[in-house]
Image (tube, rainbow, N blue to C red; front, top):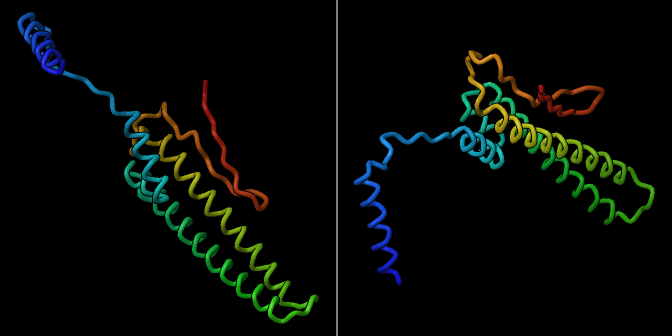
Length: 162
């Protein structure tokens, strides 16, 4: 069975070659592959997709924001855990240690949300800006993903013109 498949494939290739059926050039559109590749890079390391798209400044901002917010989240989670253990060991119900624990835990949650926002923005921006030239020569393709900070909240906005 395997030999018959090989012979059949060889005969088809022989007929195509004799008929001039092989194209002289092959065109492959890699736009989608570049988008997915950039998105996957930012999925694993925030900002890496922006660097691969030639947007070094934006990549630096996304990477620095993710590292700083991740470091802050780690620090505050460790502080909250330490304060909670101290509170439990003290055994007093109304203690300032519980308030310290609560404040550190809330700070850790806020930093974690910032980390998630930087990560999500990095992934989406890397995908949507993969085909946008960094020189701005193609005015018809603008980045549809925008991130803004307003009233204490980080907002992601997706705009697409029809």
